[in-house]
Image (tube, rainbow, N blue to C red):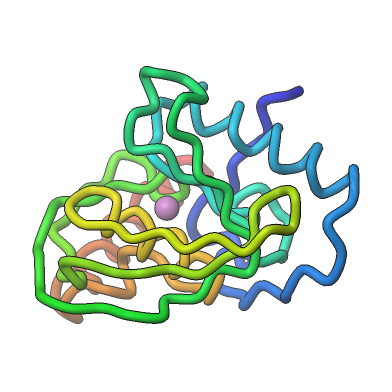
Length: 169
Ligand code: NI
């Protein structure tokens, strides 16, 4: 197992749509293990494959990252099949470091996905789990939290990033 490098905004991979997994083999399972380790190493509640440079529809979620591995959810080809209500919570993302903003989401979702054994799983989530499931599904569609905020907040974010990137150069 290994901690992987997490890509950061504005890396174009993060804006790309990930492709469906066709075969769950040892290579994929090893990627999933590494993704879980990477998530736990940062105490994050989720990580999607595009964030580590793999454009596959795979994500890991654990809303209790301190209890490492106890409530790990593996999502292969996840699909939101039901949703209701509305909730707003401040979110962060490993690919958008040092940034947190309120994001409007569905309060409850039901997700269908395959697990690492290829079994169909149905995950129902509310609260933080619901948000994490939507946040990670967004990553598979090339969407970041900054694509979910108002255009005014987004333009402020982009200006700030530009300045930071210029300073780094
Ligand atoms: Ni994220």
